[in-house]
Image (tube, rainbow, N blue to C red; front, top):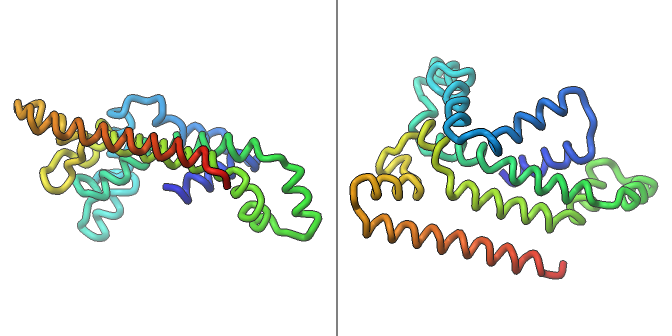
Length: 199
């Protein structure tokens, strides 16, 4: 997610091309759509009769749905907008004069991006990664739609909490809630300390 998110953020912040608005909308939509709606779109894309999942299933007999890979896809799609938007803002705030100076010294676009732009935007990129991780950790709706809730295979922590509450396992639910709260709090504390670090 980090590489893809940073790449998309750089493209949105520094490039103009046909279809940019549509791509931006596609990446951002999961941020505002109900997770179940995003999950339904993921089924249309990765299900056994889906746009991508259908040909894969016909060729290999293997389906993405109800696997741990489906959990990863759902969490990534739901968390990617936070990564991209946060990193995009950081990249857009980098002074273009530094980039122009590098170009006048003969640096290529790749070199400018890797040696000037991204290092100067690293705090924002890191913040985006942390926010995306926290969002992915708590993903529920889209994961349930695409991966289901199969014990030992696709049960994530939020799904386990839901199952425990549904079956009246209060102690298990409380333990998982406390664990997830602790991990989330630790992520925020680490992010705050990293943000204060002098680079």
